[in-house]
Image (cartoon, rainbow, N blue to C red; front, side, top):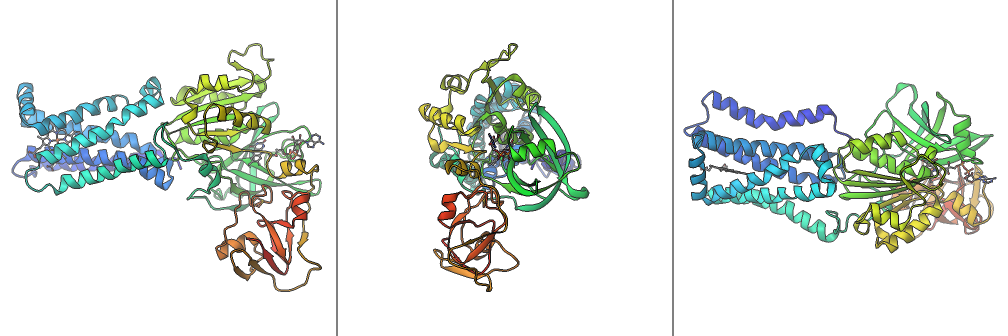
Length: 574
Ligand SMILES: Cc1cc2nc3c(=O)[nH]c(=O)nc-3n(C[C@H](O)[C@H](O)[C@H](O)COP(=O)(O)OP(=O)(O)OC[C@H]3O[C@@H](n4cnc5c(N)ncnc54)[C@H](O)[C@@H]3O)c2cc1C
Ligand code: HEM
Ligand code: FES
């Protein structure tokens, strides 16, 4: 979700309410016996509150995986600076009658004022570097380092408060307690790897790639209309999909997830997965960007047959190759060819939410003409200060090209991302490229569990190729672990979990498992990826799609739980 301008304006107006009320009361002479002191104290408290809110944004956005919250951090920090400056201005202008000498002598006399002054002084560079231009000039990492000063500012504020209170210290201690928790979170995150800076273990890509996000959007199946088609390169096209007949767009997704299409190619149903290349922040439609494979069944159909207005059978979203900005402070994205799509979804999303972390993209294309999203990448490179883009051409036949040439090499990576060993890396491209990149990254000191990979050729093709065959996609297949199908009431037993139950409303084995609380891993839910393969121990099932099963899988009686419907009393190994 990208916070709308309206939401941002609403938050800003709310932030201004306390000081507006203070002004109102001051105007009507309702600030009590010592109005100047009242105003100083009120603005002092507000400064501290806004400082703590600013500091709370990162942990809250990480814990709730709501990366978009980060776009309020700058606003809240500036509010803290505004109230701190006002606090000082009232002290200087009204309490000390605008006398520099008086202010200085008072400050030197009272240590709590010295501490307050130090806090305010530290806020100045933070406020001065809060613009996009300054982030660009300093570079994302330096900017972030500088902005850690905000912790010192908050500590100075809390100490200043504690020192000036004479009797009841409960309030300053309460503020210090909250600050302690926030600081504690950062320290814990540092050591247990929840993600802070480059040295800290950030959210492991193994977890990113291997665990379904807490707030995984709901799975949806139905039809979408192709609203428009754009040419990206000579053999890559983007298809914009919208809801049928102007109804609301039916699903949400996380940046990097994909959808499945089921296409009617020559009387057969062909299922394929395509990354949702558009970010979740652009609601109302989604886009897939498809490379036409010379002999490819689905990609040729999409390019050659599908036109604006075509209805597509879609299920979505699926996949764990996601990144929302809440998992780490920076990211390195490495793409080859059409593998740019999930990485582009992440870049688009991070830009939309105003993420301030560093993004390094290394993109390998064959020739200049094959650079997918070229214009967009050039334009966001200008606008997004923390995005560094390196494009390298693997085929040397673009004479006018002034950028990098050749395949992605350790030398290139070292040169453009010197700190790669400490970074989170997301990788997507042709299988051969990813294989060699994994080795390169290991040699460059990047632990395997810091690299998340998306393969476009997994499951179906890989399995089929490994087993020396390309499987057709039969429908209505009956898989059985014993002899003939015995008509009876369909039921399911999960042998390892010791749970069983009846099958209702044509549920799939996966749906039945979910209802009974049995954990079966899944991804596409469309019979494509093979993640939900499970052994059938007894009974018979029919599968709508089974392209992800190879001959060996079949010989071992594996079924795809997301596609399998029970015909009788079925027992599976889960
Ligand atoms: C999670 C995920 C996300 C994906 N996202 C995208 C995306 O964003 N964009 C995208 O373009 N693709 C994406 N893919 C790949 C996509 O799903 C398809 O695999 C791809 O479009 C090829 O499908 P196809 O039916 O056209 O090719 P297939 O018919 O499945 O053929 C596969 C390959 O074999 C070759 N081949 C087939 N038959 C022959 C033959 N007789 N002789 C020689 N070669 C042959 C084809 O050229 C092709 O390269 C994604 C895949 C996954 C798993
Ligand atoms: C980060 C910067 C600062 C923060 C967070 C801060 C915060 C606070 C807080 C929380 C209070 C107490 C409010 C109360 O009693 O309810 C306070 C009081 C006060 N602050 Fe600050 N302050 C800051 C900087 C300054 C500076 C720069 C000055 C002036 C040099 C200053 C002067 C005072 C004074 C005079 C009081 C009132 C003390 C009293 O009650 O007699 N503060 N401040
Ligand atoms: S979840 Fe992908 S095949 Fe079942």
